[in-house]
Length: 239
Ligand code: PXP
Image (spheres, rainbow, N blue to C red):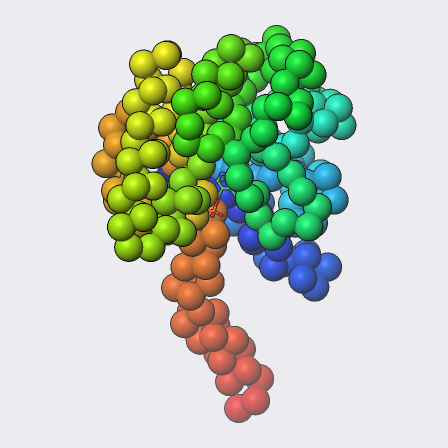
């Protein structure tokens, strides 16, 4: 099973100071050294974290799967056709949300989407869509020509008690249905070091798309070295 690392939150930290560190491009290369099979970025319409420069450089340095998450707008389709990521994942996007809140609502954009899917596929780019774990949306994705779906695991990740089993079963059923109708399945959102194993045990899943928990752990496991490097510099100059 593949792991694609979402580096958006490295850029979030950079944007907190509007500076040039930490650089998501450097983070991506380290993630690849660590064994990532792919790098994901979400270029939002408001460019709140990742920006156009990041996408351009990532396209140059990422030789494994570069996955561009984006809203299905004309601007973003234009950017995808120009940059040529290996994979585009269509996600719903709301300005006020902290992160993607749910799978796509096909009822709003269905007809327009068919044309956009075709334009992207015609350039040799694979295309996926973020869907809630239900059969209807997976079937619609297949009918619209998507190569893959990414099943939203956030409901499972956030569930407590018995509800966790119910939500896991929903993901499992969704993955099995996707396989039955012949559409490749990925999964992601809210996966962390405690809840990933159960999802990773679903053999039919092609890849997992994980960001926040990996970036969060990177901050902590790197803290000791970052502080000792700074202490060394201070010691060198103050003694
Ligand atoms: N998949 C999709 C479609 C997403 O929008 C996100 C969040 O950007 C992720 C996966 C990764 O979610 P998380 O950051 O919770 O691991």
